[in-house]
Length: 425
Image 1 (cartoon, rainbow, N blue to C red):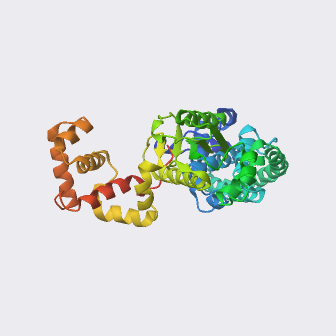
Image 2: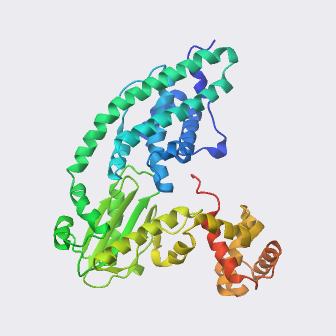
Image 3: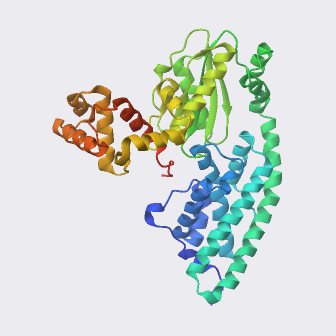
C-alpha cells in the first residue's frame, strides 16, 4: 500500500500541451527536483487552464490575455506549492517567495483589493483539489483512494490556511510601500484628469510634473508577453519610445507586472510614424491630441489598441498605432457579431490548417491590389501558385472572387481576431 504521495510523479499532460512556466526558475527548479518534470508540467498546464476558467477567472482579474497571464503567475505558484506540500506530506513555510510578492505588487498597482486575492486563493484551492483528486483516482488502486483523498484534503487545507496568514500582512506592507511611492502620489490627479475634471489643470500639472494645457500629447501603453522579473523593461521601453517621438515631458504610470501607461508632450506636433519595432514588448500608441481632451483621448485610443492587439490570433507587430487599427476598432465593437459575419462570409475558408491559411493570405493580398503579379511578388511565390490558390479559394467560397469583394476582405481581416480565443504558447 502506498504510504506517500509518490503517485504525484505519475502526473503528466500530452507533449503538445506542455507549457513553459511563467514563474521564475528559482521558484520552479526546487519543486521540479522533488516531484519531477512531468508533475511540474501538469501543474503548469492546470494553472494555465484555471486562468481562463469561469470560477477562478472571476476574482476581479479580468482584462484580456495579458492579465490572464499575470493571473497564471499567482495560480501557478500556488498549484506548484500545493504539489510540493502534498508530496512532502505537509506544507512548509514560508509560503510566499519573490514571485508571490511580485504578484501581490501587481494586484496593488491594478487596485485589486485583498478580499479579491483571498477569493482567488480559495477558488484556486477548490480547483486544484478537484484536479488532484481526479488524478489520484486514476493513478492509485481503488483500495487506496479513501486514505489518499483524505490526505489531499488535509494538506491542501493546511497550505491555504498558512498562505493566508502570510498574504494578509504582506499585502498590507506592499500597499503601504505603494502609498509612499511617487506613482501613488500622482494617482488622484491622474484619475481626475482621465475622468474629465479640468478645474485645476495647473495643480494637476504640478502634481504630475507634466503640463496638460496648451501641449500636444501622445498616450501609449506598453505590455510584456510574460511577467518578466524586471519591471524596469517596461519603463525603459516607454522612455525610449517617447524620446524617439521627441517628447519634451513624460508621464509614466505602472499598471502591474506586464502593463504600463505613459504620455509624452511637446509644444510642437509629434509624429507617431517615427516609431520602430521592439522585440518582446508591445507598444500601443494613440493618436496625437491637444490639451486635456487630447491627453484623455490619446490614452483611450492606446488602451483600445491594446484590446485589439490581445484579440489577434497570431503574433503581430511590436508597435500598434491606433491609426492603423481604427477600422478594426469599429468592426470589433461587438466581437460575437464580427465572428458570425466572418463565419458566414468565409465558410470552410476559415479552417485552421496551413494550406487554408495560405489560401486566406493569398486571397486577402490579392483583394488589396487586384493583381496576381503583385500578389506573387509580395508573397514571394510563383504567379501560377497565386492563380491556383485564387481558383481554389473561389471554389471553397462558392462564388467568383469579383463578388462581395469588400465583404470577403473584411471577413478575412476579422478572422485573425474572432476565431478561437488566444492560446498560450
